[in-house]
Amino acid sequence: MSEPIPGMEGLTNWKMRLLERIQNTAADHVRVLLQGHPTYESHYGRGEIQMLAWRTHLRALAADRHEIEIHASAVGLPPEAITQARELGERGLRWGDSVHYPPTMRHGEDPVRGDMVEGVANDVWQLEHMAAIIVAHRLRSRDGRFPPDPEAQQQFDRNMSALWTRANEAGYVIGLTADEHHQLWGRDQAGWAQLVAATVHRYGDAPLHERWRTYTWRGIEHETRRSIDNLAAGRMQGSEVAPSPTPNQLIERATQALTGSTTPSQASADRSIDRAVDVALPVDPVAGWDSEPASEPDIRPPEPGSSVGFER
Image 1: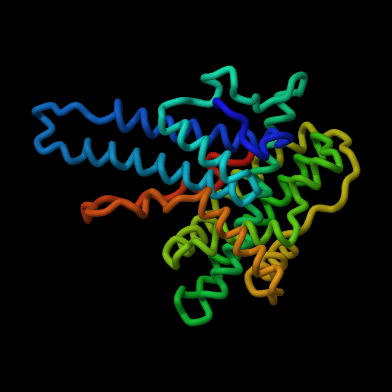
Image 2: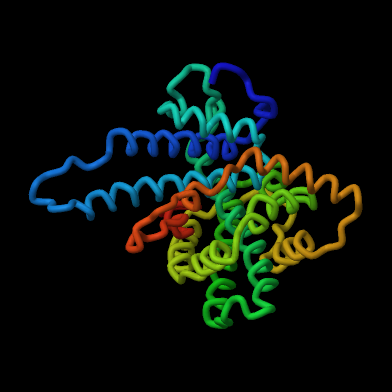
């Protein structure tokens, strides 16, 4: 990182770690691309399985990086920072390879607490993302685009409830300060416009339904509630902070962002947000593949709960 990026000063640790994850995932993609391709052996025959596995790995890494970039853009990270992290990773550089990289942990900060704050941030992101997805999914379902599935919707609601409980329990355990709580939960109207611009406004019907279906996976609730039990075992008195917005309140805010009336000044602000998102988020790398074999799976983001939030 040769030059400082505007807007990087004062970023919280969990936002810096999003940049770290973008860069390292891009670097992993380059490594697999240049060094991870299979070596042919005669007993492979045509070797389609080996080549398919390699290409599937590449697509999974590209999709994972794109999802992290969506997260980073939706929480207001500077587009220049997102682009530079991606481009440095594409050159094979990992975060920390140079002394000029800013640290993701401040001097003297408790790394365990830092990890837990990051876990809360990931849970809050999932909740906000889910709120935007469910509203957009309902709006597009009105014309019969998606078949009704009450059982899946009930599981979606239970998953949101479990994630919300874990985020609040963890915040209580680590004693979030009022400032930290506001940074994590205090998304304002402009912030919601940023979120929907980076997410559901860019999702076609199939990607939207795929993400909605992914968030209906029962394993999210199972894993989340198991980690809540572990948090309860180490519960301590936390700081008193403002109440966190409930899942219903998040859905109401997402609804306003997607359907609310827009003033001329807000419309101008929304266009600025759209331009910033376009700079930060290139075309979905997975969607850019063409001439794919019919048997090749369409690798999309990993299931929520498998690599985000807290691991216990």
